[in-house]
Length: 542
Ligand code: NOJ
Ligand code: CA
Image (tube, rainbow, N blue to C red; front, top):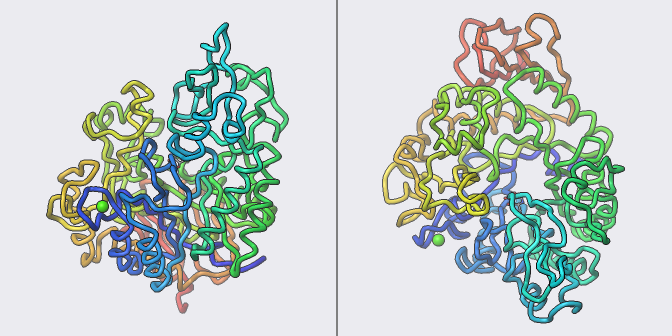
């Protein structure tokens, strides 16, 4: 097993439009990132995952890409990119860029050419066009429902419809087309040549589709008990050929470029993405979806250790990203809360217990950082930011909001620009108001507010990441708690060097075993571990 850097890295996700705004137009930009590299260095992260920064009309926050080999002028230039990358590298931080291969935007030059060229043209072959049903093609080719809700087919006025699994502004590519495949290899080389260290692969499971006629109905798609690897739209076996080609490109560099797949697939399918001849690593969203429960956490950790050993990969642990409700808020809500309904209520019903949410969030983070594998942090979680659940209707940007007719509020609440200072028009994010409104209470959570406070969540993250770096060993862990009395509420595991992490998921304090406390997510006193707290121990003399 190799000791490649990404196997046990702490990776910090930057959602560029909401990180730091250098030119004061309200939108975060690349020079903003460059100006804040010191924050990342102080935090101690190993790498940055940068969400899309390519030219885009922002129909889906940049996941609608107009041009894969350029920088959005709203965010800067290729020279700004080079400068940002150099600053990160100089600080010892690697750079992973987001690649969006399932769909382009409807403003991509190929899509414009496809519309202009008409039915049956080679230009339309790069996307998924089908004739409409009904006498004049006025019916969609199928009744499929997309990931954002709403139909997956859009008519173009000449009897053809195009497929979009996401927003209408995101036409799906046809991965049976050689030009599409070749163009993505060119894009991977373009960024690898520029010096990026890896790629995060958006919707890695959807590229290859079986679009042969007749198309099934949505009910048939849902009901079909298909043989794994043969679903019409998802996780098809042929994807391995695509990623083997990508792997050859990655491995032609020294050091090889890494890749991490966004792949929501069952455990027995994940190795198709994580094996060394494929992308190499995939996101593991299981803890992100788990309830605050020792047994649930334990089962997930054990399963992923087994999967890693089988595939030769290493896990990716994650609690928050730009697509989900921030985990401080999630952990403050009663189990079973309907999150869509909660957002609809503006975050009021039920009111989250944010004290408890933060206590659990810190405990979960410390647990994650002790696990073998890489930990993905999402910008702002180091400040303990909760979800901004009451963004005014007029400010909403997530396409889900419009597609659902204003029913589903969507993901804007975790994408609010970061507070850097306690004052100023956008709390130090930029010189003017931010593109999504920030609440007044951001002042108390700003980087400047927390930076010199030893008790703050920011200081806690810094200390924890430093301690992890000191203690880190080979990727091995043993779950050392018994399934007995404490087994329901306490999860304890250790690395071979004795570095032990203990989390008390319950509310009553429990006895701590012997050892020296390295760090804890909350106060530890009198040899007892309070509820909703994690502690790291080493041997007393260690
Ligand atoms: C997954 C991304 O994380 C999400 O933000 C985006 O909307 C979809 N893929 C479509 O690209
Ligand atoms: Ca800007």
